Length: 358
Image 1: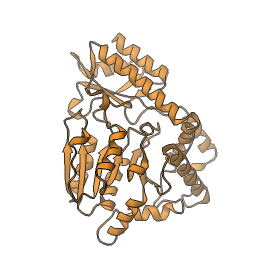
Image 2 (image 1 turned 60 degrees about the vertical axis):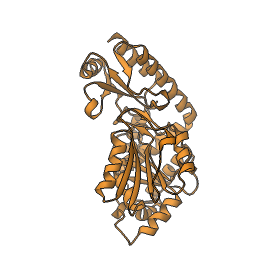
Image 3 (image 1 turned 90 degrees about the horizontal axis):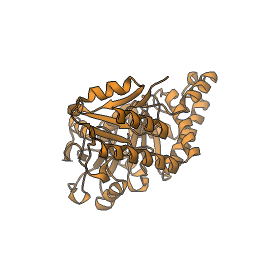
Image 4 (image 1 turned 90 degrees about the vertical axis):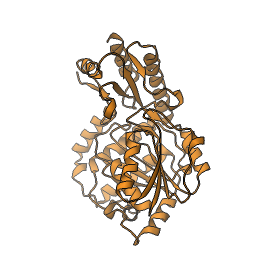
C-alpha cells in the first residue's frame, strides 16, 4: 500500500492529480509550445480559477515563477529601492529578511522567539518603509498569524506595500486581498502538487511602484514585475514555464472550487482540532506553539517528550505514515504534521491511532 505523506512540503498529492496527469499525457499537453494558443488558453483558465478561489480584486495579476523562494528576491528587487521591514517568527520569515540584506537593502525586522506569534499592538514600522513583509503561516515553527491581524496591519500602516508569504497557508487562509498588496505561494504544499512552481499575486499598487523603479535599478531581469506583467497581458510568460505544474494546478483549483473552499476550511479545522486535542492529552507529545490563537491549522508542530523524534518518525514510516521532522535546531525533538486538503479525515485518524499506540 502506498505511503501517506503528512510532510509539510513536498506533501501528499491531491487525490485527483494522478487522473489529471494521465489525461494530460494522453492529450500530449506537455509538449505544446508555451507560445501557442493552447497555452494561452490554459493560462487564462488557471487565472480564472485562482481568481475565483482567492476572490481576487480585479486589479490583481497572477504570475508564475520557479518557486516561492524566487519571489522573495523578485519582490524585493521590484518593490524596494532601499527600505524594507520584516515580521520574523521563524526560519522562512527570517530568510525573506536575509534576502533583503543580501540585496543591500536597509532591512529591519521585529523578531519573535521561535514558536511565538505577534501582538499587533507591539508592531511599529519605521517611517519610509517601502515593503512590509509577513509570513502568514510559518512552516518551520507551526505559528500562524490570524488573517484579521494581517488586515489590521494595513489599517495601522497604510503607506508600505504589504507582502504576505502564504506558502503553507493557502488555500486555507481567508485573506482579504483588498487589504494587502501582494502574496505568493508554492504548489507543493496546500495544493498537493509536485514542487517546481511559484504563484505570485500582484496588485496595481505594486505595479506602479515597480514602474517607478524601472531604469533606476536592477529589478529582476526576465522575472521582474514589468516583464511578467507584459507577458501576463497576453496570458504568456517571459521564459519557458512549468507547463506540467500549471496544467495540474489549474485542474486541482477547479476541483477545489467544485468542492467549495468553505468545505475545505471546515475539514481543515476539524482535523486540526482533533490533532491538537490529542497532543494536549498525550504523555509523549505536546503542542509546540503555546498560544492557541497562533497555532497553525495547516502545519502542526509537536514536541516529542522523553524520546528522540527520529524514533517516532521511523515507527510511523514502517506503517506507511510519513511525518516531517522538526526544523533546524528542533530536528531531533519535534515532528511536523501537515494538515493540507490532500489529507482526508480518515487518513488523519489513522495517524492519530498510530501515535496513540506508540
